[in-house]
Amino acid sequence: MKLGFLTPFTEDACKVAQQGPFDCLEIGGAAGWINEPDTRKNALSTLEKYGLFAASFMVLGPSIRTPKADMPGVLDTMGKQMDMANEFGGAILTGAAPMGYDPSKNLDANVALFKEVYSPIADLAERKGVKIAFENWPGGRGPYGDGGNLTVTAESIAKMLEAVPSKQIGLEFDPSHFIWQGIDSFRAAREFISRIHIIHAKDTQIYDERVAWGGTFGRGWWRSRLPGFAKFDWHGFFALMYELGFDGSVVIEHEDDSFSGDRRNLGFLLSGDYLKKALMD
Picture 1 (cartoon, rainbow, N blue to C red):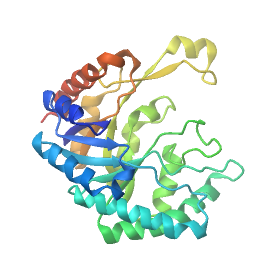
Picture 2 (cartoon, rainbow, N blue to C red):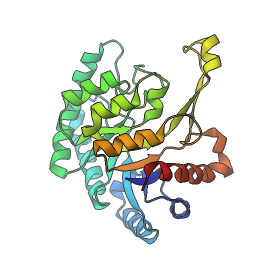
Picture 3 (cartoon, rainbow, N blue to C red):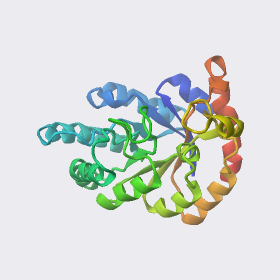
């Protein structure tokens, strides 16, 4: 497994990666690069300079409510993104997607919408040889909120992967979002291993005393943490992933406000050192 972190692309980010135990970057904010050949060329040159590679590009896939009339344009854009991914040596297209959940419909009906929109995208990904990985982030409106992400629970993910069975369509597996839902990340990893393309390394701290008094309907009873600063068993998780044959990239997603501002890069480095030991490489 290779280790990296999610970041907008800058040479400074590459310098931080070189200081730590990092091999790669997940590049955010690069959707517009499909029309910027010079930007892509410079990024490739900078990555090579620092001994790094692009594990993935975080791009937002289309909504499951996309009208049929809009699909030609969607496929054209995604085709260009896939070409960019191949230009960078087989980077994965990732993102918190597919958005557009319709709470007026049940889960199966939303999965049917997903199948209609993403089946031609899966066909295109097959032809291009590019992997697409959905992050299991419930969306800013909360789980199954209007317009939110469909990739929320293990139940919904299982239905999605069955509906679109292409191995090019899979997961950016993030245990942190399962933790606060009470979902077993180890069981989910075993179930979905053949469709896990990349891992987001992020932990969640649960404040049990707040749950005991205020329950889980309120806010402030959990927060995102960097790996190494909460309780998820990363050593055990990576041991399981080795056992299951996973050999992809592990990317830190930094949303830990204890390491914000001038301490942000320190957070990457400390968490990277922690994860490197857990990876046993």
